Amino acid sequence: MSANDPLVAIKAKALWMRRRSFRMVYEAQMGHPGGDFSATDILATLYFGVLRHDPARPDWAERDRFIMSKGHASGALYTALSAAGYCPEDWLSTYMANGSKLNGHPNRNYLQGVETNTGPLGHGMPVAAGIAIAGQITGAEYRTFVLTGDGELQEGSNWEAAALAGHRKLSHLTLIVDRNRLQQGAGTEDTITMDPLDDRLRAFGWDVVMLDGHDHAALLAALCAPPSTKPRAVIANTVKGKGVSYMENQAKWHHGVPNAAQFAQAMQELV
Ligand SMILES: Cc1ncc(C[n+]2csc(CCOP(=O)(O)OP(=O)(O)O)c2C)c(N)n1
Ligand SMILES: [Mg+2]
Image 1 (cartoon, helix red, strand yellow):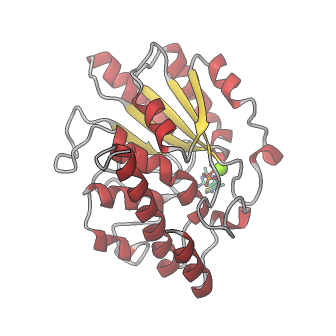
Image 2 (tube, rainbow, N blue to C red; image 1 turned 180 degrees about the vertical axis):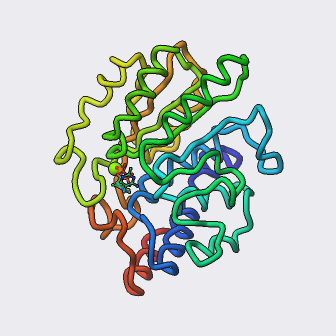
């Protein structure tokens, strides 16, 4: 791995994002750190290795679009956008404070780089499908990426969008599923079975790749692969709370917040 290998930058950004987003949650005493940490490596790979974008021109017509459908993991999105140059780092210290542009859930009217407002689950996929259809009609080259939670896929709206995308062969649409097997307070398979998620998506007309969602090289290869003739789903197997020993795979860290000792321990582990 050479110094200008994108994987070196992605790894460094992911570490910074975890440390910085957890500080945001600690200072606000609110947030969704478990889902921030399962998505961090995916977002770091997207923003620092995949997306064709320009923070100086957030409305550039040919930019790749990224929609953070699991909007509750705003700590991961805001740290990625800040590191990419969409807002000054000191905005992060205002997370969820009165008057902040960084709400608990992302708002495109407040922060450039946010493609569409999210938070109510099940909205990102339909919007992403619409954006991909617009690109297909105009012959644009941009690609549209959308990240959903796995519990989020229990919302029926996702499956309407998946059927539409498969039917219209939206080759420039990529769905990434943060497959951490936990939702709010319970396991996905204990709530509504999602497996076999890959076969379900294939039946809807999608190409499907399954990988380790913390493996930057695997993510980079899957997300940079040229479009085929179908929409692509990347099922990213992840660990909710990834990177902090007491948080990993613990449902209570969906929206748990650290005390001073827990925060200090996390900073020791995230190195
Ligand atoms: C329509 C809707 N219902 C309920 C919620 C409350 N909620 C926020 S996050 C969450 C669980 C999401 O689980 P998952 O999609 O697996 O996210 P992750 O594990 O990645 O945090 C719920 C129920 C919501 N935001 N929107
Ligand atoms: Mg989940």
